[in-house]
Length: 178
Image (cartoon, helix red, strand yellow):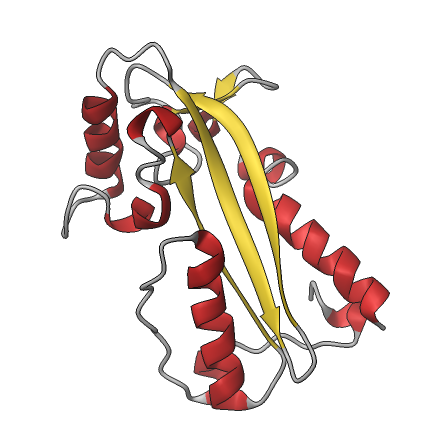
């Protein structure tokens, strides 16, 4: 497992018989990540980590940001949320966007967070043919590969993703903590 070399075994809340779905009430990825990791630590007394992530579009004032999973209102599918974002962005020439992921870690001594970010842009249409990814991947263009995330196999995307970058920072910190 990912954390075994650092002396940690990863267990999920369900492995411990814990029902876990804290309300994400913060206005930042860091805040929401800490809501989860702090609550896990409070419930278990075990070192705990959690993440929060989403996509932000500066031309939309940072939307959808922390509301990425519920953008456009309740009950929308991933595709409907992506289409809603395209509609809101309209014909804007500023199509810059970025994915962010914040991993937070809490134990008796530490409460730290690590952010990974991937910059790109929003396409003008929805990719109906790409078979990879989820969420906003069909409209997110990743310039270094010249493709949308929905066109990049998971194994390749995982080498450059915002989650990978955040986890690398976390694991580097964890390795140096010992």
